[in-house]
Image 1 (spheres, rainbow, N blue to C red):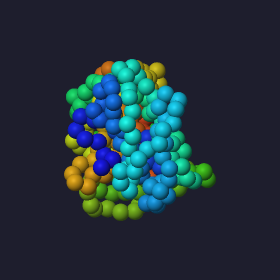
Image 2: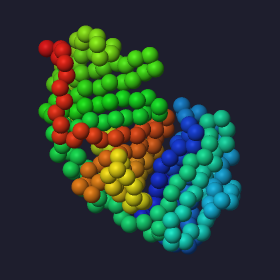
Image 3: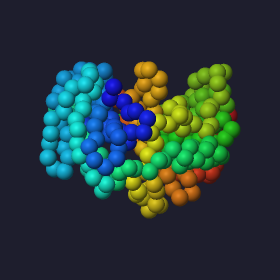
Length: 273
C-alpha cells in the first residue's frame, strides 16, 4: 500500500493536477523507504502509467511500481531538514516539492487535537477558501447560520443558510430568492477535517507565519480502514492553539483555507426575512 503505516512521516501535495502523497518509513535518520501515492485527476489512469522520479539533494532517481497508485524508492536521509521532489510525467503531471523536517519529526497529535478542540469553541468565524482555483468566502455564526459567496470570472453567487431554510442570489446587489426549507439545520461550527478523525501520523513538520503570525506546521493523514480515502492535511497552528491555515490534498480536491475574523459576528444587509 502507498498509504502510511503507524509512525510514518507523511505529507500531501500535488504535481500538476495529480495528487501526490509521500510517506517515509521509519522516518528516522538513515535509510528510509519512500512510498508515493498517485491520485490521477478525474479518476483517469494516465498518472498511474506515468514515469515517476524522486529528486533528493538535486539528483533524480527512479522509483519502482508497488501497485496501481503506488511507487517506492529507498533514500538515505540525515538528521537535518531536507527537500525532496516527486516528478510525475504526462500532461497531468509536474513536480511536487516537499520540505522534510529534521528526523525524527516531533509528534504533533496532541497539538492537532488541541487545536481542533479550540476551533470547535468558536462562536463565529470566516473562511477564505481556494478550492482548485475556485475562490469562496464562508461566514459561520452560531447557532445555525452560514453565508457563502463563490467568486467566478463573470461575477459571484451567494447562499444563505439560516436554521433549516436557504436562500440564494446572483451577486451582492441582487434580491434573495427562497430555495428550500426543512432538513438539517446549518452545521455551525464546521471544519473540513472533522470527517477524517482520528488523525493518522500527525507530525510537526516545520514553522512559518500566516499574515505575520508565527505558526507551527502539523501534517497528518486522514484515511482509515481497509480501503482508506487518500486525503492529507497540513495545518498552520498559532501559539494560541488556533488553526490559521489548512491545506487539504485529495483527488481533484486541492483546498487551502484561511481562518479569519474569529468570534466576530457578521451582519448582512437586506436579509431575506
